[in-house]
Amino acid sequence: MLPASTIQQASPFTARDRLFLGLLVAAASAVGLRGIYHYGYIGQDFLVHLRLIIAFPTLPWTILYYQTTPPALYWLGSLVREHAPAHFLEALALGFLMLNAAGLWIFYGFLWNSMVSWQVRYSAAAFATFVPFRLIHSIVIAADAFSLPLFALAALFALRLFGRPGSFGSWVGLSLSLSAGVLCKYTFAGMLPAAAILLAAAVRWRLPSGERLRWSVVGILALAVPSEVFALEMVESSRAKGTLTDLVWLRKGEPAVMRWRDILLLKENDLGLLSAPEYFRDKVYEVRKYSYLGLLHVSSVTDVMNLFQPPPSAISTDWGQRAQRPFLRDRTARSQRLQVWSVRWCLAYSALAVLGTLSCGALSAASLLRRVPILPDATVVITVLAVGFFCPVFLTLTLVNDPYVAAYWYPRLVLPALLVFFSLGFVALDRLCQRVARRQGAPRRFLLAFAGYTLVACLLFIGFLS
Image 1 (tube, helix red, strand yellow):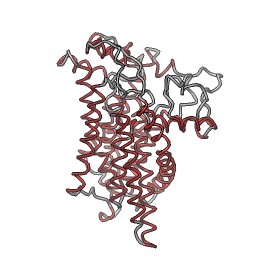
Image 2 (cartoon, rainbow, N blue to C red; image 1 turned 180 degrees about the vertical axis):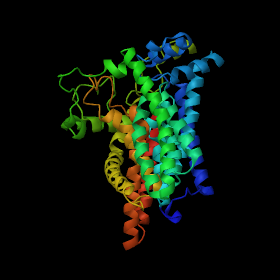
Image 3 (tube, helix red, strand yellow; image 1 turned 90 degrees about the vertical axis):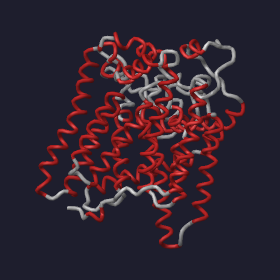
Image 4 (tube, rainbow, N blue to C red; image 1 turned 45 degrees about the horizontal axis):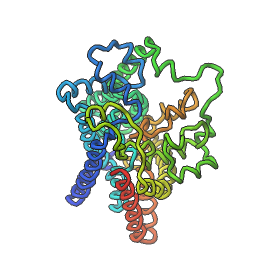
């Protein structure tokens, strides 16, 4: 059994931390509110979601499971529309914004438990708060807005169980949060095997031998509930010959559209992404024009679909008509300049994310095989769960028939996992700085410079998103 002294306890934020994080959330909420005012909730597949929300009470299940999104979005949207019919889309987007703010607070706790240096902690929190793909998809009417808060909630219960597997309440909480996840977004199914691996290691190392069988049974039953929910969804999708089980996949013998070398290797054309191209005008979705890594980078740190740009002045002034008729937006010259700076300035964070994910992934795997983990519990938990969330999309990119135009490379599909991967870059940097500090003294000037570098990145994000 693992000694209690080695089981990490969540440390509370200091008063200064709470003030700083509160200011971050307030500023991000202000940017989100401005996005709602500019109809930023009108995103990809908006007309499909709008039609299903309006018709939800009378829709047959076959139509619901024909789509790529489980029914929770349409149920919630219908509920909000019933109580706020005049501006139900704005009310739904506001609700999403509040849910994501709550998810951020949980996420901050993982960052604080994973890092030591306050400069890196604050930098990681600011970057995670303002990085464009997270801010944009905290209000867009789509199932992606559920992903961060539900991922953070499930990770919180998983962290508690990783430290104390004998907590019945935490098993119930994990089961319910994962069940809610698969009802909101199918990708949550990838967290089920990841959670099983995490908690099997916890039961093995952190319970006395006489307790392991009992709590293993409890764990199996807890994870069986979301697993059964997902299995029933797959049955319904199969009956409806829906997008998830039938329509999006290559037929047997058809060559892959997106190949593994397109996914794992950079391309010469990726240099063109440094000019911050737009999704529609510049056709960044052309088949094999750019690498998956390049597309993921540019769509993470710019407003590639212009969802937060001001709407054109020539459209109707009627609020209802503007909210229900999608329209294309153009960037201002200032926004374009800032986005060009952003895509170049943030290359450092994407490089850190790759290095941090690989190193933390390897160390997390090693931690699960040891009695005393190599990494803090919080780092191990979010790394394993993020990889689980990422895998259903990443491992099927070569199997879908339209990965480019349908934007299967878009960060919204793997939002919480990508946010974790970016954060692991900060974790790796913090670990490196701690090693240097033990030998040569704290690299204070470097840490302050890095915090300033991140401040510039966040100001760029705020500049073109607001």
